[in-house]
Length: 588
Image 1 (spheres, rainbow, N blue to C red):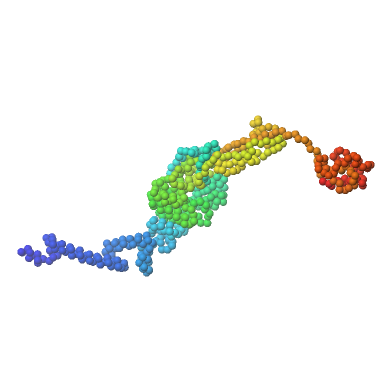
Image 2 (image 1 turned 90 degrees about the vertical axis):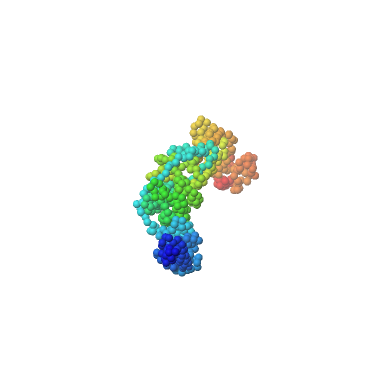
């Protein structure tokens, strides 16, 4: 009883603090929980109904909650491209300012106006903006440059052996003659239809583009600039404009590449912008290429996967939206190991310049053409398509004083057949004195089906095997062999023959001489002598109405001599009753 009275005299709080009163302790805990929940509910309701409610800076948990809700709201509005003001119908300046802040200074109009806006977006959001056409080209003056970063770089990677030949022999370009080209006696083969090309920078020095063109080079990729592979600052190629203009003037088609070290979408946009600025006012024939490379010590080493695909996609998209054909320069490792599952996204949308050099095209030979790709050489067997193939890093080209990268542009495939020489008349017969033109009716057909007389020649030999000319052969009875030779530009030289027989001329009766128009002939006199219209005598056997005069019809004339049988008449003396020689002379 004393204990019970003592408990009643103590308050509930005192009883709670003494660890002996369990029921009192539980009641106070429940009461505190109810009070806290009530206050919390009222605060949250106020926050949701009016975002302008000021929260005490000491309420850290509620501030964090509000920031999280704002972040969710921003993500939802970004995905639907609607601001919170648009969805709620609000249009106040206050709401507009909130939306800008929520989007962290991102797109405020049709284009990104300030380069600083790019830094506030994720790579994914920025790439989306590029694809929507909302990103403008950055002016060159706004792109930081450092020409000290413009250093000569060497290719990284393995030079591969060519695959073992299947239907075509292994290339051997170090030899002066194209021994790797099949002979015309082989069956038709399918080969690449291609053009030879190079890629150059200012490190090739001053180039004689006329010599380059005459050496068989059809196109060139010319560097416009790059980004340093350590510090990551951009620079321009100081010979770019000179090389583009001189190459095109010589008839060499031009493409452009930028040596890329981009590791973000923002840097890719910066590189594409500088490239577009460098190409301004120039005529570009071929693609504009992102030459993305990496190696030991390069800043690009960590980039791979979707982040890598985003960088390539951003550069190519901006290039394409500004009127150029975009392309990427990649090696096998970039495609298979860095892009991986994203390779179809890039290679399915942009042209590929494939870096896969063969060891058989190195070292460079002093004979320029001996290390060029030749018809019949193999190309890398790959499941993905590539229009350009960089097959050597150690080429030699006339007009360039340094080693240079060699490329081919694949224009499709061609089936090469055996070339032909078509001879209309393979057996010719003439008589002595009659000449011929051995090329009449003779044409060649190339392995690609082109009919031509180029590279087609002939030689004539007699039965003793001695070479003779047409003039010599036509004067001598005998049989001759005409050998035709055609050099096909791809499959070698072929020959074919015709025979020519010269026979003795056949003897024929010598016809009576026909008076020439300049000869004066006096006809025999007729009873109607003195007529001025007397026709010229007609040779015997001709159909004429005037009979030949007979002796009985000849009048007695003392002043006119008797005509002789000679075709040349005697001089006629003056006789007014006879026919004048002048009138006779004027007759045809």
